[in-house]
Length: 232
Image 1 (spheres, rainbow, N blue to C red):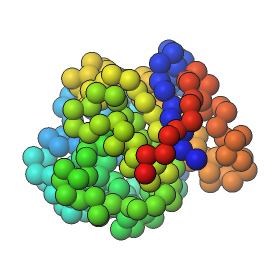
Image 2 (cartoon, rainbow, N blue to C red; image 1 turned 180 degrees about the vertical axis):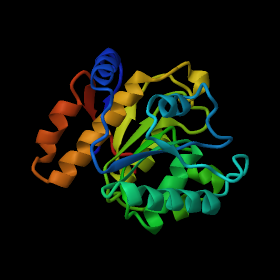
Image 3 (cartoon, helix red, strand yellow; image 1 turned 30 degrees about the vertical axis):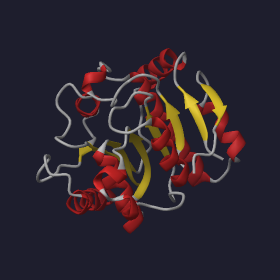
Image 4 (tube, rainbow, N blue to C red; image 1 turned 90 degrees about the vertical axis):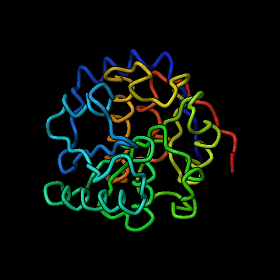
């Protein structure tokens, strides 16, 4: 069952945990960032993360101003295939806005090579007329869907409806707009904490040694967890 993680008091915990651990990516995984429309500028948390972690790679688009799901998905596919050459366990996709839709379309076409996905402030599929091209059931890999309560591009309730369909962990980050550079997040340490959570889930899922209840405990320390209301 999906649950909503509400980030609040846990931000300080996430910052301390990530600063101490330096967000070690498990061996065999490659982190790929997938920006949204117009790319992520230097002040965006994705760009800041790329500068901090030299081994990460960005999925580049031929035209950042043209939100073509087919073309953007093709670039995601190419990036995942490249990642598999050096990371046998696959790619961890850190996506924002329209980049999330490209990741989800690739998951619908061929999820192989995707180890997990952090989906931040996804664009509204219906506004782009692509809802029918996205997965209609749980994703075959761990995912976290992060949404704010005042995103001008998609209501949180709608985002959580899609996330429930995809079997994603749902994360409420409060009033952060579109969760971009304008949100004043700087390096967004709480977001790195969420990525650390995703990496732990990937390890636990692949190991197959922990039950769902046992896996939930360590990740959710420092955050409030409440039962979700079915949205779909």
